[in-house]
Length: 411
Image (cartoon, rainbow, N blue to C red):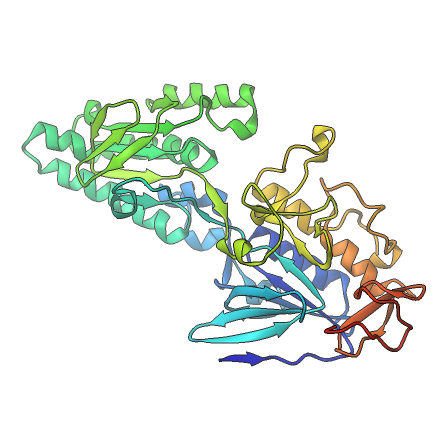
């Protein structure tokens, strides 16, 4: 049974769902811009820290303590209320988010909602993939991968059969994006350095194979940088096979789409991510599996809902007419979370239509301007929702109303 969490009627209720790059930096920026009397900022996150995922390859090779790649939320975002939970659904009509906290759920009301639930590992329907492949999305998986590679070398060192020994020392990485490429580049150096402690093992038996269905490495970086990364990988001894993926996995081998079979005991799945499943339950328009947003990062028809990060299909205005989407990277999530200029939010206009630069524009500046712009924060309607008045029209409701009452049904 859901509980209802009441909020103070005197302040703006801002709820941010997701504690990744987008949610963390948006929360930090809002807490800096808005005074406690102006807004209650709540961050809902299923973890107690923001994980800096680009550092996971360093954690996997042992070059970085995993604690150095995580930013604790409570000690960093002291102004915000941190709720350890997971957003399950959004009721836009009532203005509330259903949040799961262990074995119970609560209904959390909002006036402005920022969705930044991030992404999850994209698993394909490949026989044996879920049972035998290792993911690479969390610090725990990075630590496990390191231990797995070390254990395979230990087992190979005592394996008398040459074929089985080579299988133990063969590692297949699927996905030549950011994570897979950097992981392969660093792990091959780790195993090279470890071989000095295994006199029985031959460097010729160690094999790192990087697979990708695309025809380039790291296509997000462009052809020039992708070619440079490919040359580096091959210089370090990584066997890069493009336009090739896996068709099946078992405990002792990997079957490739080109018909070949590789004897190996370790498969690492880095073949991309997909938006958090939460976005499919919202009833909001989707573009390529992500929530379609305007250049100002709000959802058309829902002026109180913003989406950023991996879950948002943000138009890339640098591509001309914005036909391309911004890639789901940490850099874009951070830009989307921050305000556009280093000035007070009171200096911003409340008009969304004037803001079109999504390269650095953030939802926080728009919402902060509406919350603090004189003459726009008016009152709450009959249902307790806040109103920003433009003349006689409440921008929250479809009805025309005055400054002190709202007749729109259900609002």
